[in-house]
Amino acid sequence: MLPPFIIDQIRQREEREQQRRDDANRPRVQLPIGRPLPPEEEQRGREEDESERGVVILDLMS
Image 1 (cartoon, helix red, strand yellow):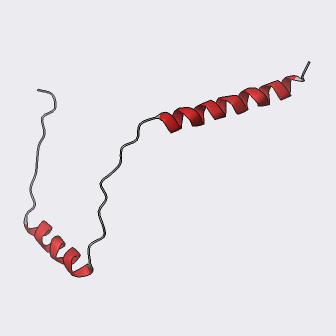
Image 2 (image 1 turned 90 degrees about the vertical axis):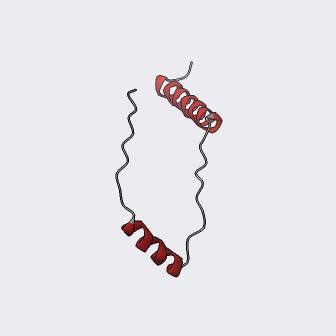
Image 3 (image 1 turned 60 degrees about the vertical axis):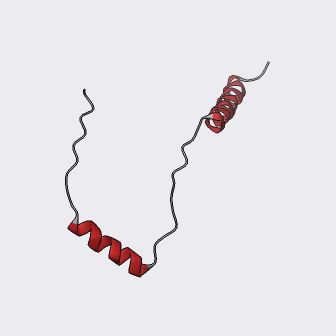
């Protein structure tokens, strides 16, 4: 018979391994991250963004 603390450690290790397996099998979303813009294009993009500001309201309750 094993001491109770050894049994508890074995149980915890098995739970951690099961959690890792579950995490590995969980689907993941790949974000479409593009390459960084060169500084001149980034500045041009900021100027365009500042001039075209607005508000968009999405009604999710209908």
